[in-house]
Length: 455
Ligand code: FCB
Image 1 (cartoon, protein in one colour):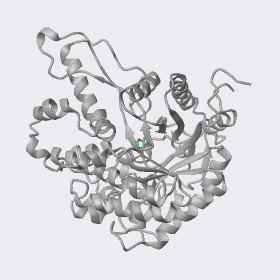
Image 2 (tube, protein in one colour):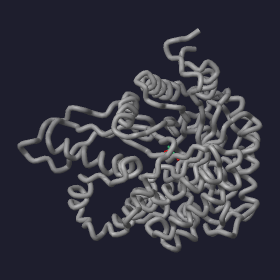
Image 3 (cartoon, helix red, strand yellow):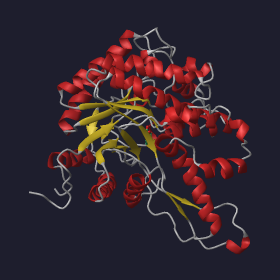
Image 4 (cartoon, helix red, strand yellow):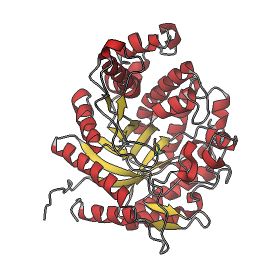
């Protein structure tokens, strides 16, 4: 029977995680330190002094976690590789065979369970040694990433056919190098801009290498995009919105899919911040062509929209705010599912994108188990349900949307927020690390089984 919200038969249902957020075993079996190992040890960086040293102990419990995913019924699992687990100093040829073997077993375990692996190569845990040499703001990191991508795709490319080079380069450069909220905690416009460029360049150069090692694979990149709306019709708010959109969204989409950085950001917005063209000398001839190497899909992480109010509104334009944010999740992100639908349509219209996966979507709700160790998180179910309706509408509008990954399988280390923000379908007991599926787990299980929202 087809119901109102039946998804296409080949629509892919998945869950996503990342290495530092779940693995633990931060110094086990030859793993080298990452910038997150260093950053979390410094007091004041992470709420509550939390670290990923143990995290969900997935490194030891991965078999149980795969069995749980099989029970959930997901067809795909997006996870990331810890670069310093494979290459302790970041550089080849010193491969840590034990580290690589962990991912080898995980991939085989997933395939045995009929779950397709989607590998993210870089989800933020840069080897500390590479940061010591300058990190992403330095061009030498580009070649190191390509070498790492080569080693991993050579080893796993016979079985893994879906590759994501980077997760959210905006976050890496902005939080890591501009506002200092994430590792390595730097605060420099110049570093943030060159980090972005090198992340994108390393993506473009890794694509053919991965394809070569993994015949008939699909390669893409994951961006966090945030649709922006002016708070009022005033010119100042509209300009501020264009600027936000340029720096947040088009600064990544344009080079990847058009081979150029957005002109308005280059000429107007950066000069407002006193960043001169000479400061952009890290962009070398031919780079943009490499960055725009055609890819097979875009991974989209969507959580919220932004409502933009200019902080420099001239008196005569001081139009009252017309859009106010609606309800928020527990980490203060506004819930706005319809913006996902509009964003997906916009992407399809403005850029030559062959296929899109929602590689992350989910909500922080800090609901604890009640006395019977059940977790009633209807509110998360509603969030995911409403965003899946946005996906459904996008499919009706012919957006080439291929699948959806919930962020995240289980509560985990939420970066600077520590363990306080809970996005998981599964609760982790603080003391025992036992896994307790939440109501949202069972709801997602039924959704996948029915391939539909009507159940
Ligand atoms: C994204 C990250 C992911 C997780 C979610 C909540 O920006 O990719 O690791 O932290 O936000």
